[in-house]
Image (tube, rainbow, N blue to C red; front, side, top):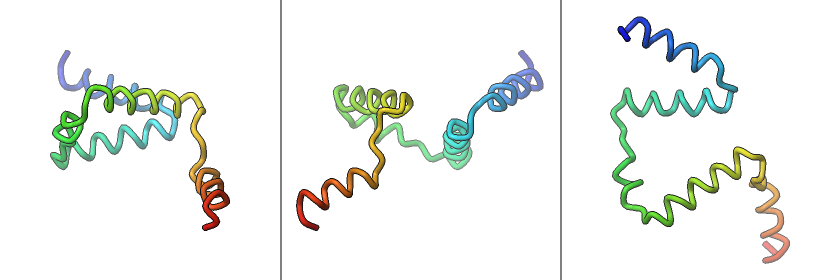
Length: 81
């Protein structure tokens, strides 16, 4: 595959993404272009921690997350803050 074909393939894949995923991909590309690599931090995590993060991301993608405002409201009520 030559560079023009590769660019077209990448463009087509990006074009199919919803807004949230497109923003994530943009962030990844920016980090790559700016040479910011967080893999050292990721690799410092235990396998159990990495798996927990992956599982949490899947749950969020499936709409199983709890909005921040709701969590904070519940904690404020619980601790009278």
